[in-house]
Length: 217
Ligand SMILES: [Cu+2]
Image 1 (cartoon, rainbow, N blue to C red):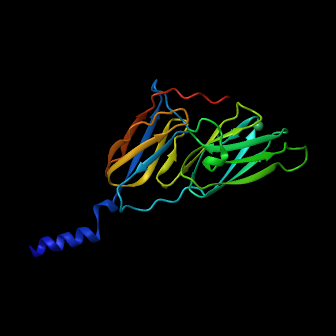
Image 2 (image 1 turned 45 degrees about the vertical axis):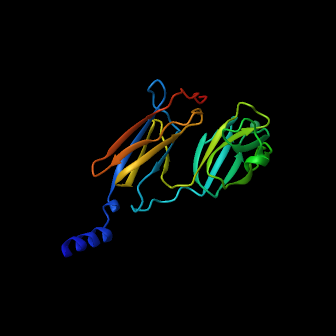
Image 3 (image 1 turned 180 degrees about the vertical axis):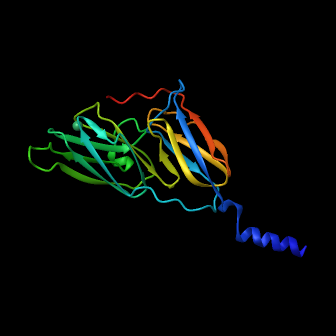
């Protein structure tokens, strides 16, 4: 009995969860093609190694009628700087994604008027805060085709998929990890997937039920 309690004390001092593994998540669309710019969010077991926080600053430029980057991933409380590199005015608006119409007042969104850039002068810029977790939809009052997103994550365990549709997480606490995905055109929430992370690199594939609209070249 004494040995057993000693072992238990040892297990508490050096929990197995402190071990960590690699998890590679691939996001594909309804047709099986890789989906870039999807946000993969993990819920790993507690007690593992800490993960570096997500960016607290992001710069989003308006260039040739587009938001660059089209999707940004930040932590709660991040500040964003919007920079207008186009020679014409943009009237940026932001609201919680999923709301039918832009409604800055009720969703904690914002509006920024940015004059066009004049030859030889610095671009106009303005700052805004991202204080609420969840996806934020960016648009422009003057140009209906402009669309962007900022995903505000309340956990550091989030990453954007690359052009190959893959997000790789290093040092994930071992055990059962819940994997969720967010993508702008995936309006119906997909069920989270449970993945066992261990010593061997783990892989998971999440499939959207839609084919996202492609970015303009
Ligand atoms: Cu505009």
